[in-house]
Each structure stands twice: as structure tokens, then as C-alpha cells.
Image: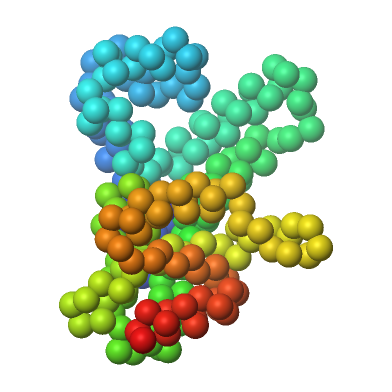
Length: 227
């Protein structure tokens, strides 16, 4: 979702266009590399020993070409064909090439956009309720290190931070009680570091894509921060 945030797209079609344009830029950067480096960057899968040697072959900036940029539509089709061929070798012939292409498209374009839209809409919902507070988007580095999406301010005072997750991250456990997914548990471990460092709580907001907040208790928690 990092690339989606960077795009500042106002709608899905702007995001899709940005993603493909970013993929074109990625391919341009790869073409400037040596043939040996191009082979490494373009690989869809690598063995453990190859992974250990990547740092000696590629610089940090070159390695990030596969993480900081999108893909062209042609690249997505190639990835789909690769997955299909690998599955066929293993005797899995019941999934078509188009199924794999659609899976990749949904994973790299649809899912990030839904997550981005969820964040924007959830914060809009909170802002409508707490108009005296300021919800400031966290830096990418803060999101990566501490798993926080927004910081909550009253005037210039930091009150806390927020991590926004899909309502699907709350799984039904025993006796119908909803429990956080492993992904959420990892995020909470990261956010605790921020909480200890800044001496403020990190609140987890579970929301639907259109912004409806599922865990209503977080509303009261935000009110408590203002007390």
C-alpha cells in the first residue's frame, strides 16, 4: 500500500494508471543495469543460496527496484504465465493462466487500493466526530517501524496514534469472541515500541472499506484521550 499512498490518486483509475506508469519506469531502470544484474532483478523466484548472494550483486537501490515500483500490465501477464507453468509442473492443471493473472492483478492493484480507501474513509469518519482533533498521516518510515497510520494531535500536543485495519482482521474465536489475526498481533508488537517511546497509546481501528468503524469501543478510547 506504500506505493498507493505515494500516488496520491483520487480514484481507482488514477491509481491503476500510476501503478502501470511506475512499472514502465521500473523497466527503464532495469535496462540501465548490467545483463547479470538484470537477470537477478527479473527473476520471479530465487533459491536460498541465491538470496544470500543478492547483496553482493545488487546495491540497496537496485534491490529496491522490485519493491518501490509497480509493474506494467505485460509484466503481470508474464508473472501469471510463470505461476501457471510452475503449477503445471507440479500437476496442478485445474487453474487457468487467466486465473493466475487475475490473482496477481487483484493482489497488486485492487487490494492496495481497498486498503488505502479504507484508511481515508475511516479517518474521514473520525474527523467528522472529533473535529477539534488533528489526524496527521504518519511518515512511511514510522509506518514501517512502528505500524502506525496516523497520529492524533490536539493543537500541537500528541495524544496517541492509530493503526487502521480491515474488519476481516478480526477473526471469530471461541464462543463467538473476535480475536486479532497474526498480522494484527505483529503490528501490535511494533506499535508497542512507539507507545513506550512516546508515552502515548496506539489505538487499533477496524473499519470497512467505506469507512464504517466496526470496533465502536475505539471511539470512547479517543474521547478518553481528550479528557
